[in-house]
Image 1 (cartoon, rainbow, N blue to C red):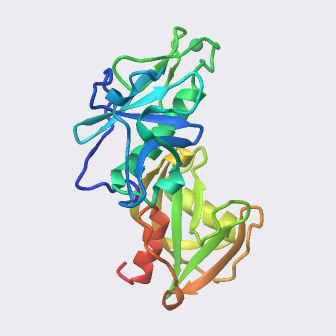
Image 2 (cartoon, rainbow, N blue to C red):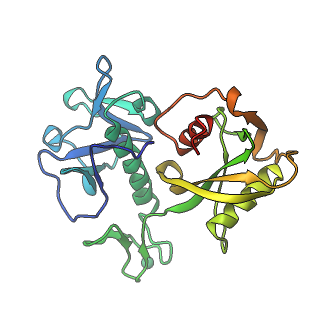
Image 3 (tube, protein in one colour):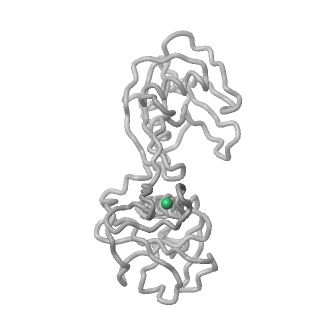
Length: 277
Ligand SMILES: [Zn+2]
């Protein structure tokens, strides 16, 4: 999955630090990133601070991977970068490159960039927010404190004997098969979220919920929690057409899916296909 960057280690503790010559710098151009790309070797790397002496930016500490520190370059304007052969690439295109930690660092940086941009001003009094010295928190003189938003959400694989329930979203670019998914609502446990989302999207009852794994999903500021569960009752699907264009039972034998190394959904479908759960 996206966060699996072994043998490297992600360190998310906030450090009040300035970039050093070897620090890696993440520079966005809307939702594109300026990177060194080697299409022949399929390798991507972030520029080092030493390469970017002339870049006008404010630097915010992001995180470290092993001992390498990453900083976000916050620029007034997102004009093209002329330094050292950097190229602007979309995050989706980066999926084709190695190493794995570059992809994960890119999407984590995107989440934090969005958080900083969306919280320049205090939602309570309208004054400017400033970064706290000790933790990843924005604060205002009025006392308001804002931490990065992390929204719990579920991915649910519903099993019916040798069949699994696969869905397609109604109005999204993503057209491959998915599992039932949705955000937690106020006042419910994560298990309630699983049962409610399945009932809302396909009108089915389930039992025997089994937690599988979780995954940070920075694109939607969420923490996805993956569950397997079993159908409890009739298998007739009642589709919510606002959410889904299709939902159907597919037998393990007929599943046609390739490993993508990115999403929890993909891993769960593959685990079901391999019949090792
Ligand atoms: Zn305030």
